[in-house]
Length: 185
Ligand SMILES: [Fe+2]
Image (cartoon, rainbow, N blue to C red; front, top):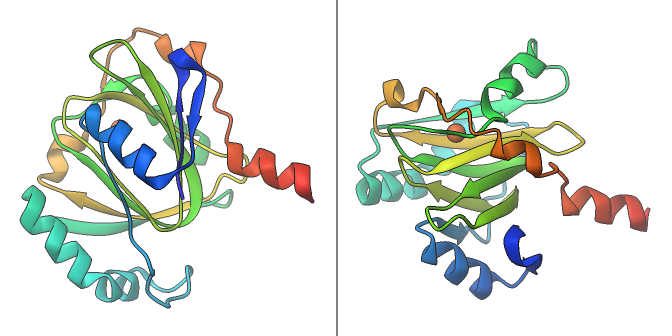
């Protein structure tokens, strides 16, 4: 399940009802898709899309999305640092950023219109929808691995628009999940 930190209040939410409610207050949709389908997280993209076709079609109906694909990022991905550098600075898009996490984890920071910054660490089974125009940035966690279904209203709208605010520099991209794992292993 996701871990959400309200950075300004130094408050961490780990309860699904609290997470859903607090994110909804800022316009962020969060859902936990469980039980997840019994499919290997390294299955071919077409198989993942087919397995989750019912959920994908449901989201398309709800959000007006027209296409879906699977993004797969690992330390072996060519040009990974350049790819990450595109998304780890504050930006926004002309369309929603919708991700359903299949494997790995990642950290979204959301800079809300009220000035509050939320850190949302997502993992397998988490669905997040960041509405168009929302200021945000994204980091991978230390294992630099994420696989996710993405949905688009229009892929052309997904180009990052940078704010150059540098507000992202004030927040460390630290993932609780891995910190927790390293403390317990
Ligand atoms: Fe983005």
